[in-house]
Every structure is written in C-alpha cells, then in structure tokens.
Image (tube, rainbow, N blue to C red; front, side, top):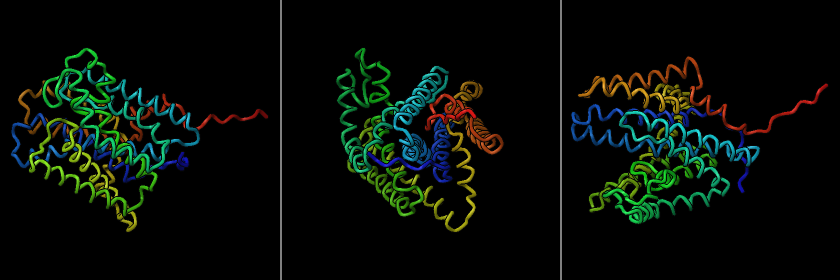
Length: 346
C-alpha cells in the first residue's frame, strides 16, 4: 500500500503535455484533408504526430491519477474513477455514432481509467514491473486472441461472434487503440507523479529514454521487423518512445523555465488548451461532421481552418471562461474525493 499523495494543484507542465496530446489528435484527425498532397518527408513527420497523440494522453492520464489517487479515501477514489471511466465510455460510444472518419479513443480511455486506477494501490516497483511485462507480452496476447477469434493481427478481421464483444475489443482487439497497449504508459505516468513531477533529472531521462526507444523502432524496421499490426513490438517501441520523449521535453522546458523565471510563450497556451482537452476532443470530432461533406475534395484550406478554429476556440474558452463544459459535467457527476462535511446545528 502506498502513502496517499498530497492534494494536487494544477501544474503548467502537465497541462501543457495534455494540451500537446490533444492538439496532436486534432492535427491527426485533419490529415485526411491533405494526405494525398503531402511529400514523403511531410507524411513521415505528420505520422509521428499521429502516433504521439494517444500514448501521450495515456501517460498524462496516469500522471494525473497518480497525483490524486487514492486520496483521503480509497473507496471514494475508486468510485470517482469508475464513474469518470463510465462517462468517458458513454461519450466515446456516442461520438462513434456520428458520421466522420475519426477512430474515437474516449471509450478506450474510459476503460483504461477503470482498469488502471485500482492498480495504483500497488507500490511503484510493482507498477514498473507490471508495465514492463505488459510491454513484452501484449503483442503476443493481441496476436493470440485475434487468432482465436478467427482473424490474423494486421490481416483478416476476427470472424467469431464473441469477437464483437465491445469490452473485449476495447481491451485487446481494437485495431487502433486498446487498453492492453496503453496501460503500461498509464502506470509509468503514475510512477512519475509519485516521484515528483518537478524532478528535472527524471524529465531528461524520459526524453533521452524515449528517443532511444524511437531509434530502436527505426533500427528494428531496418533489420527486417516492420510494424505488422498496431500494438506489435516495433509499434510499441515507437509510440511509447514518442510519448516519453515529448513528455520529458515539455516537463524539462517547464521546470527549467520556472527555475529561471522564464515566461512560457509556447507552453502557456498549450497548458490552457490542456485544461479543456476533453471538451476540445468532443467538439472537434463533432465539428468534422459538417466540415467533411463541405470540402469533399479536401485541401489545405479545410485542414488549416479545422485545426486553427478547433485549437483557438479551446484556448479562448480556457482563457475567458475557464473550465471546459465536458470537464465540468464530469466533475459534477463524479463522487467527491472527500466525504461531505457535516456541520452541527447551533
């Protein structure tokens, strides 16, 4: 059992990392507008942005959970995580019903919160060990379950009726995101929070370790081990490496700048967007519904307008209004971390 963390305050670096993740998602979801017009170099760079988004979001979610869980009460902490997870699942399933091209991730993240939060009752060494084991065995589990369901990972789709179970899909079989692949980063994020998010040395280690993983993924491809399916070993090396490197860079810049009294010209706006990340996610997916048919031939105009309007509107909301509407609803429906205070009548 770990010692309950102290009450969390907003950390600009963590908000900026969350903002970077959701902006990367917005850019990735706008790529189909311009994918046919990109050079090989531009395609490569934008694919890294696409691959960065979901693992970085999972890492930041784990760090945020590590800051507040279990809190004053384990039961209330688990109840709060469960309610928020179910709410994210409902949002994700609802967004999937709309007519767009986005592979929605919110329901996967909701399941990640439900599965991952109880594990945070374990000590940090157990969490790191579990994360490493998952990284090693997850690709084999994905391949084995897909094969048992009558399909082939990276090839034919499963054919058995039980493969259509949504919980199984969210945990293992989803071809874009799955809890099995995101859980290691969630756990690592929680361990980073326990270590202290203002630790500059740890941030630099994350940056260097992440870059090493990315280079290892490139080396694996050169040695004849390309990405065969989403979630295989090469894919995990790249995506986890991108997330760790981006997180490390953002946090190192924040910590170093704060120590020197430097105003964060870039991180400040990113942090503002990060405070309304869920609202931005829901809004930009809904915005695609009328935008896609309005620009059937795609082009740089819809790409630029879509990304610009989405991100600027989120930044303006955060600056002028404050908490995002989706965040406000989630807080309203979630149990409080602390039991209600009773006041004796005079």
